[in-house]
Structures are given as structure tokens and as C-alpha cells.
Length: 279
Image (cartoon, rainbow, N blue to C red):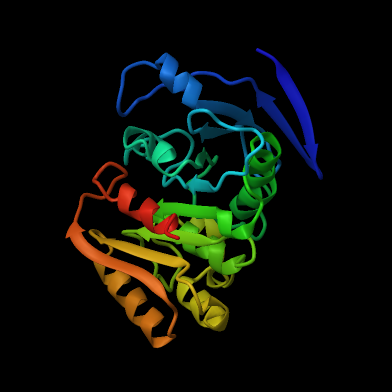
């Protein structure tokens, strides 16, 4: 195994050569096809408390001279935990990387991912880690487009919140964000394990979706950039978010049916990716 040292600003990345990653959800062991399509990199960043991974799902016949759209498949659990399934394996199962000829990227996080920077703890800076480590590494290592409209975000539950908050806080960096069955209308810190990540209510308020929507309403006119699908654990949040988007006259894609189980493999991913890649 070889180690490559890369410096991205002040960030030291330790990138290990591609290795097989166990398919815990859909198969008992890696296959040659899996190893050709998915590459796994081990990363160390000062914004995380331990080593993390970046998995990259590539279309067949990757052309290094092309620039591909990239969809970031945002996790809902820390590390490689998979109680709610594995988003990248769901994408691969449905061959969405082939259908849309794009690259899918799934990073991991040391702590429960809420896609925020803790106000004091330098090892819980999830937003900074994603923006300053994950994205630069992917764009340095793979032939992905660096146009904002070609950086796309996919998530559900916590990572649905994360997808929207990342786009709303950085509208010039991302093109579209899809959230499925996510607690988008939270107004108080402390639910679903987010307290240790946000740290304070003041910090949480800087990531609140409702506040960010109101602040960005004017800049979100034009083509729909926000995708809201699914009915499940957080149907009330989705209905309220949909009403707020209509009130603010923000174009968006909205689907509230059918009701599905709260995991990556309940059938919603294909539709969400279709909206993300919609011309």
C-alpha cells in the first residue's frame, strides 16, 4: 500500500491507494466490478477527530479529458455505520452513475454528521471538512466539473438537512440539493443527537433552514435548485417547508408520496437523482 502526501492549503491529506470496501448491505464480499467502479481513499483532516474515508463511484469508460457532474451522497451516520443502509451502494445497485454518466462521492465523518462547524471544538468542523478537504480532494483527483451547477448534494434525514444547509449557506458553490424525509424545520438545538455538533443555540441558528430560506429567497429565483421529496418520519417538516417555499415564492421540486421506510434503500434515491440531473 502506498501513501501519497498532498497539501491543500493547511490541510494534510494522507491518501491511501484504492482498496476494496466491504459491501455490508448488498453483498458479502467485494467483486472485481465493484473494485473497478468504487475507489476508497483514507483521509486525515484537522477538522475531524480521526481518519475518514472518501468513496468514489465512477462511470464505466471514464474519460480523463471530460468534466463530469458530481453528486455528493451525504451520510446520516458517523464513520462507516450503516443502520440506515448505504447510499452509494443504492446508487450503484440502480446503475445511476451509468444512467447519468456522472461521478458519485460518499465521504464519512468522525462524529454524527450535521454538516456544521462547532463553535469551539476544532475537531468537530464538519462544514469546513467537507468544503476544505473533501471537495478539493475530489476535484484534484478526478475529472469533475468545477462549475457550481455541476456540484450536487443528495441526502435524507440529517444529511437532507445538511444538503440544504450547505447549498443555502454557499449558494455560489452548489447547484442543487435534494432532501428526502428530513427534519428541515427544526428551530431548537438538541434533537437527534445534534447538540454536541452545534454546541450552542446561537450557532445552531446560523444553520436553521427556515432562516436561511428567508435570507436567500431573492437569490433562489429562477430554475428550481431545492428538491423536497418523501413522506415518512418527518412529513410535518416537509409540509411546513413546502408552505414556506411557496410563501417565499422559491421555485422547487416537491413530492410527498409515497410513504417509505426511513433508509437509503426504500426506493426514493432514483427519483431524487433524476431531479438533481434534470435539464
